[in-house]
Length: 443
Image 1 (cartoon, rainbow, N blue to C red):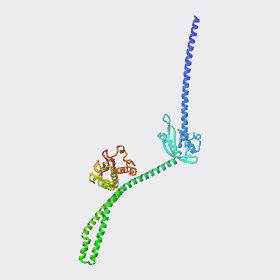
Image 2 (image 1 turned 90 degrees about the vertical axis):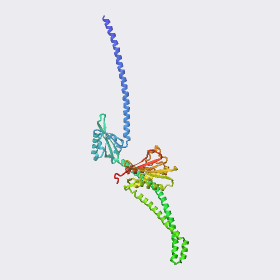
Image 3 (image 1 turned 60 degrees about the vertical axis):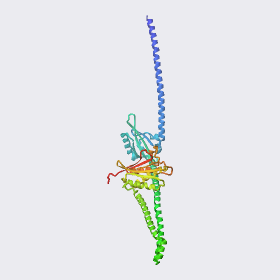
Image 4 (image 1 turned 30 degrees about the vertical axis):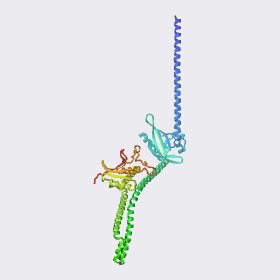
C-alpha cells in the first residue's frame, strides 16, 4: 500500500515539474521578446535623438545671427557658431558661463530686466544691446523669448540678435528704393500731365489759328485801304481840282473800299475777341489748377474741359449735354477739369473705330452728391477688365498711346475731393461717373 502511494506521488511530482518548467520557459521567451522590442525602440529613439542633435548642431553652426540658449538661472547652455566667431571664444568654453558676461557692462541691467519682463509676460522682448566682440563692441537688436517646459513654466530664454549695422544698411537700402519709387511715380504722373497738356495745346493751336489768320488777312486788307486813302488825301493836300479828285475817287473805288474797311475792322475785332476768349479760358484753367479749394459750377467746368479736348480732335463725334444746367460743388476746379478731360479723351479713343461716335455728358443730383456721367457708344469694357480699370499702369491702348495712369490719377483726385469715380453698371458702350459731395450750406 505504501509503495503504491509513493509511486503516485512521484508521478504527480514529475507531471507538476514538467508543467512548471514549461511556464517558466514561456515567461522567459516573452520577457526576451519584450526586451528585444524595447531595445529596438530604444535604438530608434536614440537614432532620432542623434539626428535631432545633429540637426540642431548644424543650425547653431550655420546660423548667421546671434543665437544664445540660456537656462532659467541665466547660464549659457548653447550658442551659435556666429557668437563664437564674433567674440573670438570657443563654443565649449562659453557653455555654463553667465550670459550677461557676453554683453557690455552698461547694458547688462537692461538685459536682466528684459529677461524678467519676457518671463512675466510670456512674450518676446526686444532691446538694443552691445555684444563684447573680439574687436570691440557690436551693437545688436536683441530679441528675448521665454522657453517653456511641458508644464508651461519658464525654463529659460532664447536670445536672438542681428547686428544693427546690417539692419541700418537694410533700412537705408529700403529708404533709397522707396525714394527711387517715389521719383519714378512723380515722373510718370508728370508724363501723364504732359500728355494731357499736349492734347490741350493741340486744341489751343487749332482754336487760335482760325481767328489769328482772320485778323492777319483783315490787317493786310486794311493796309491796302489805308494806302488808297493816303493817295487820295495827298492829292487833296496838294490842292488838286475837284474834277481830278472825283475821278481819282472813282478810280480808287473809295466808296466801296470804305465799306469794306468797316467790315475788315469788324472782322478783325471779332477775331481778336475770339483770341481774348481763348486766352481767358486758358488763364482760368491755369489759375484753377493752383490747388485752392473754391466753390465752382461742375457743369460749366465739365463743359470747358470737354470743349478743349474736342478742339484738338479731327474726328466727327457728336457730343451732347443733358441733365442739370448747373451744379455748385467745392473743390479744385483745375483738378476736376483734368478728370473730365481724361474721361472725354478716353471716350474719343474708344470711338476711334466707330462710324457714328456719340458722347453724352449728363449732370444730376443723387443722395447729397453731384454726379457727372461721361458715356459713349463704343465697344465698352469687357467684364474681366472691369475690376482692374482703375489700377495704376493698366491700359488697353497700344504701346506708346497711353501711360495707364489717367484713370488711376482721376480716381485719386475724386477721392481727395471726398467723392468717387466709378465705372457705371454694365451697359452698351462705356460710362464713367464722378460723384462730388454737394455743399452742406446751399448758399
